Length: 110
Length: 111
Image 1 (cartoon, each protein chain N blue to C red):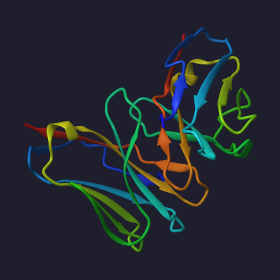
Image 2: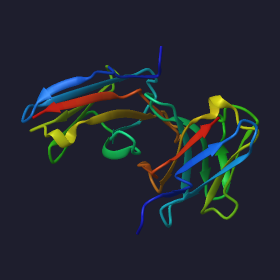
Image 3: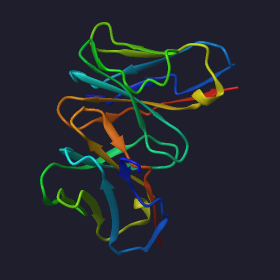
Image 4: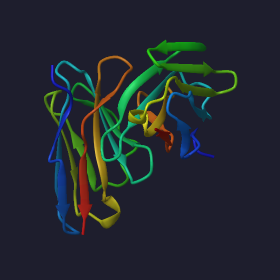
C-alpha cells in the first residue's frame, strides 16, 4: 500500500462546475498536508496547505482535512479550463520530507 | 525576491558519465530539499539540508548519488557513473517553515 493514495483520473468536469479531488494517507502521525498543482512539463506549484481538521478556504480553492479518516480533499469551485493540470497531494509525516501521491489529472471541459 | 532556480534545465549524459545539478534556493530559506520525479509519478524525496547540514539522505537511491550545500545556500546534486534508470526530472525545493517551494527542475536524460 502506498503511503499517499490518489485516483489517477482523469477527472473530467465541465467549466463552472466544482471539481473534487481526494487523497488518503497511511501514517497517522502526519501533521502537515499540501496540495500542489503541476502543469505538463512544469514543476509543482503550491496552492494550499492545511494542518488542522476542518476546512480551509482560499479563493476558489477549499482544502478539507479529516485526520480520523486519514483523508484530505481539495475542492475547486467554478472550475476553469486553466485549472486543467495534475494535482498532487503531499504529506509531511514529521520528517520534513514530503511524501507525494501520484497525482490526479483534472480536465475542465469548456 | 526571486524563486528557486536550477541549472541546467536540461542535461543529456552518456551512460557512465558524471553529472552535477545546481540549485539556488529562495534567499534566506534555511531548508533545501531534492526530489526525483519520474514520468507520471509524484516527486520522491532524495535528501534534505538545514543550512549546511545534511539532516536526511535516506532517499538517495545509491552511493552514486551525492549532495552538498557547503555554505548553506547553493546546493549541488552529483550523480556518478549515470545509468539509464537515473533519467528523471530532479526537483529542488526550499522552505523556511513548513511550505516547500519548487524550482523548475532539471530534466536528466541518460543515453
